[in-house]
Length: 119
Length: 110
Image (cartoon, rainbow over all chains, first blue to last red; front, side, top):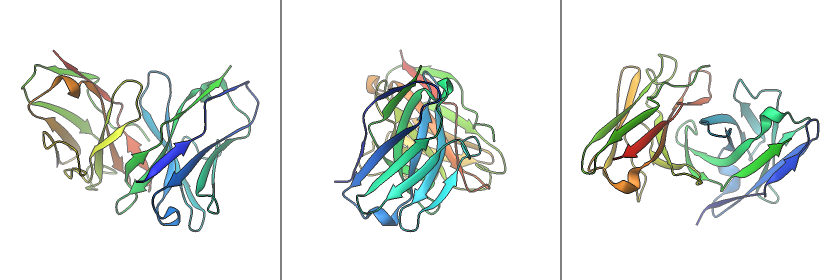
């Protein structure tokens, strides 16, 4: 059974760096795009970006380009989301998602979410 | 890149059929048959219920159906049940090679 298991909740201060993780299992890790979706408190979903672990090719949503970095370690089937300097506005739930479909346009598996609080 | 437009809320009684619309542009919904729908219950991660406009993943009830006309996609929930009360989000692939979500619709079962 495929699964995306995310790292635990984080509480950070503005200006600090952070890397959260998503470990995939139950499928061929290098053959699917995998990425991140943000949900700010009480708000909707926002697609942040993707990585293809097979060759580390990445795509970012326009609001997130340059704000975060998505990386992958295919030796341990894990994808990361990294902030170099957190803002209070980064407070949100972050979901790891697997992309499927012709353009990896739909997300058929979701992690349990990682709550990031910046205060 | 603006979010797809969904009604903020809809409501219906048990047994009714309820449509939820999702309006985009010719750069996303209108051009690509890559519209998806997700259901999110409070405190839970979203769940895929429709992909590529009208395809249901295995295990999803056939009370959920999807369609598209022009720049607007729709999710219809038939035979409304109490367990359907949740937030619903549409998404679409875009001409910029990205994915965009709708703002979400809160469904209340009366």
